[in-house]
Image (cartoon, rainbow, N blue to C red; front, side, top):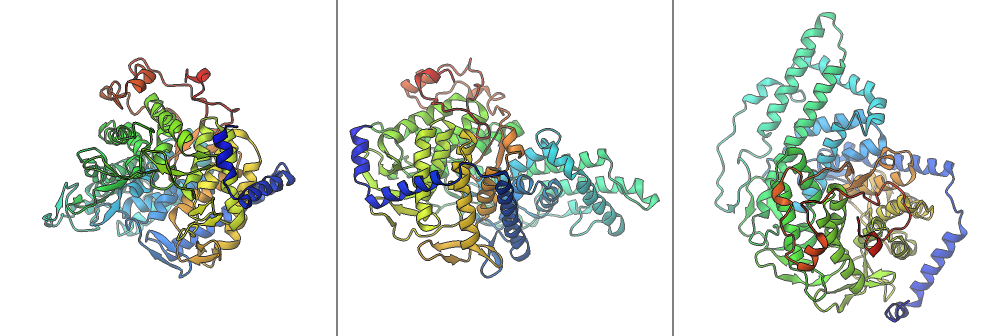
Length: 630
C-alpha cells in the first residue's frame, strides 16, 4: 500500500471505517449463497413490485409522463409524451416476459404520441429515455425470431388474439380514434406559426399535438393491412391471424419505430450546431434552440449520445447522427487539462472554456465515461477505449481515495469535495468491465455501507464528516447501486452482490411502498416520502434487481449491454462506422501519444471483447501491458 493511500485512509473518520468493517463482517457471517428458493421468491417479489408500480402509473397517471404516488395522480416532467410507458417498454419484455403486452403498449405509443410539440426538453434526458427506449424496442421487434424468440414464442398466441381483436373491431366499427384508417392521411397541416424568437429550426411548425406525417402514413398502412385481412375473412364471420399477417404487421411497427425515433433525433440535431460542436443542453422540439438558451452545459449531457446515435446511424445508414456524437466527444476530450488529463463538469459551448472546473465521476460527468467504454463494446472501435483509458488513469491518479472517489480541481488536482455522490455508484460496474473487480469490490462495499447506515443512499454523503451533505438527503429510487451489483455479479458470480440486491429490495419495499406505487424518499434520515416516482425506477432499478436474480433471463444468456437508462443493447457488433469510411481515419484528439496508441484504424478489426456485462470471466486488467492486444 502506498503512503498516499495510507494517508488518505487515515483521515477518514473511524466511525465510517467501523461501519465498513461491520458491513464486511456481517456479510461474511451471512449465508454464502442465496438459495434457489429464496432467489425465486425475490424474483417474484420484484415482479410484484414492477406490476404494482406500472399498474399504478397506468391507472392514475397515464398518459402523463410520471406518477405522483402519494396523491394518486400524474404529472408531465421531461416532455409530455407518456414518458414512463416508453421508458418501460423493454422492461415489460425482460421482467414480465410478455411479448404481447410489449407489442400492445408499443402500438398505442406509436399511434398516439407525437414529438411535434411546442415544448423545450433536455436533449440528454430525451436521448437516454426516449431515443434509447425506442431503439431498444426496435431491436426487440427486429430480433423477435432470434435473440428474443423464446419470449416471443411463449406470447405468440396472445399477440394473435390481440391482432384478432383489432381485426374484429375494424370490421365492426371501421377506423376511429383508436384504429388506423386511410382517411387520416388527408389531414391538412395548419399555417406555420411565427419563429421570430427562435433560431435553428427543426421541423414543420404545425399545431401542437398534430400527429406527424410519418405516423399518418404508417396508420394508413396499418389500415390497409387490417382492411385486406378482414375482407378475406369476413365472409366466415371469424377472424384469425395468419403468420404472414402477423409478420407484416410487426414489421410495419418496426418501420414505424424507426421513423418515429428518426423524427425525434432530427429534432435534437440542431442543438449540436455550435462553434465547439458541444451541444446545447435544451431544445424546443417544434422550433429549435431559443436565442436565450443557456450557453453552459454539463459534461454528461454533451458526452452521452454515442450509443443511441451510433445505433441510429447503423439502422438508417445515415452518418449524421454518429457524426455529431463523435464530434462532441472529441471536443470534450480536446479541452481536458494538459496537466491532469481531467475535464470539468460544466463548459461553455461557444468558447470551450470550463465554467465549473470540478472533476469527478458523479453527477454531471458520469455517463461520459460509461459511454466511451460501452461504445467500444457495442461498436468495436478502439478509439473509444483509448479515450477512456486516458480518463481512467487520470481518475485513478487524482480522484481515488481508497475506497472512495473525490472531486478535485481539473487543473491542479486539489481536492474540492470529499463527498460520495450517489451517481458515482455506477463506477464499480464500469470497473468490472475492465476486469478491475478488486477496486470495484471495495468501492461498492463502501457505497453499500452508506445504504446500510441510512436504509437508502442519499444524493450526497460527506465521508470525511460521516454526515449527509446539506440539501442532498433525498433518495429518488435511483438504480446505480443495483446496476453495479448486477454487473459485479455477472463478472464474478460472487453471491455477495445478490445480497446487496436483497438489501435494496427489502428497504425499498419497506420504506417506499404506498397505496399508488412507490415514492421517492425525501429525507433518508427520517424516511419522509415525496410525491414522485421517477420513470427510471421501473426502467432501471427494478430491471437491474430482477436480472440480478433471474439467471435464465435472455439478457443473462446472450451478451448485452445497456445505455445509461438501462435500455438493452444486444452485443452483436453493430458497426456504426463500416459504411462511413470518412470516420475511419480522422484524428479524434490530435494527440501524438494517443494516435500512436490507437494505431491505424484502416487495418483495425473488431476486437475479441474480453468481458461482457452478461458473461462471467476471471479478473482481467485491460490496461495491463500483457493485455494490450485487445
